[in-house]
Length: 611
Image 1 (cartoon, rainbow, N blue to C red):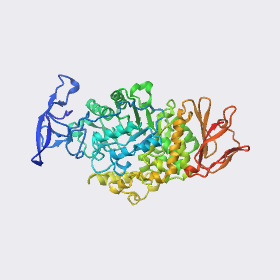
Image 2 (cartoon, rainbow, N blue to C red):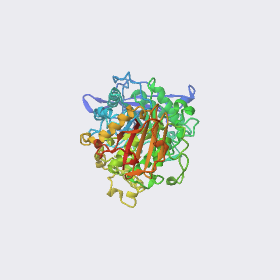
Image 3 (cartoon, rainbow, N blue to C red):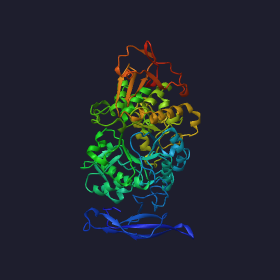
Image 4 (cartoon, rainbow, N blue to C red):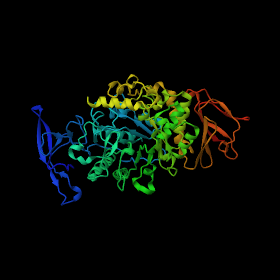
């Protein structure tokens, strides 16, 4: 235990009297200070051994005070963050995934889910039951929203306070292991969303052990920043770096998604993101893992292996791609959509180059945004039409299919799933779930009004909510109905077969087509055809693929003065796939290439191959 602000630390072991279960027996064991005379890096640490068994509960006493504190590195909090910690045997689970080798970036299709709302049960066990359906769909890796324990009965998980403890709301630690083991048996990887930019406001006991955990030298939108580079930051860094390795090692996870790294402030010689990425790879052993980051500042340098070696991350969440696609799909505007038109050129550039803003002025923030990323491959960018933030924020809980006409949505779904990036689907997207996804957080009486007010203020950035009482449109975050309404109904898969078939067929093409599966590695280019239409051409070995998308009305393309439209020598283009297939709810597709030229059917995506 690192507790440099204290001179005495002891462990209080708690057990129930068999004759009187309500009576708690306590045994106290003092820990010894590790002095700097042995190792300066151990200054402020206390350690010791005492008899305990898996299932025992314990807390810490500091300087002989009356208050008992949970373990900040607790592996489980059976009564929540304010209760005692439980001794967990990390080696007690019988894994069956010895042959699992992990994940490589090429070919991945991610699926973001929130354990509490992914199924009616809202548990690891309930989620495990749905894994075969995701595998059959064509998903390759699950991205789990944060599971670190937090107070209350529900929440997104981004206000976690016990970073080593899977939330008791979803099950016990071995239930999470069982979920991962089942996923691996089905050929699915599991990536965990982790939050290292702040700690939640309720149940955070780190400051009780050391004032060095946080710093006022930097500020995040959620309060004081974590001290990764100031005085006493060495043990702080170790706490978070070891947490990253812990999830990989003890839960056999296949990677991490780091939340909002733009709010992880670190001026050290090696940024903590690179250090924890290296540690995670070390803990994975022979397994290969993937590390993705969300970074509003769009700093591409995090993903450069030549500079950072094994500390380089594998992928970058690409909000620019989302914003351009969402404007094209739904004509969203305002807030962070201000700088996007949803134009064909934006969509082409997002496919080829990842970030659209790589250092240009950005009106929304009145400054420059991004850094050069032209050297990164398209598959280094995670692309999406929906994710947890974008559904809850800009759509007020409404999903992409609730904001668009069916034809445009089908066309942009093809753009996403046949494109060269690493696509991500949000839970329920594959079957057009009718349930919304709201922001929900079960905070205490003091915090709930503040969160409610902050959320209402945030939502006024978006035109639909500007000047309107948000509570009249959206449920309050602390309203249980916001949580209950966000739960998926897996049975809807049976009622929405055409949407499910669309996603399944596209993912099969992505997986099996000899050119699409290359993700542009042999060449990718694009061209604007009209104000609403564009093409992407993927080059292969001996044959190419041409994806033509028209987001406007049906129209002839005359003249067709674009060399990327020309088929390979000695061939003509034939339609391999159409988003207007009746199988997906479309009206069918006449031959778009006639003796008189090209015809672009409206709100349609067409994939061509040479014949």
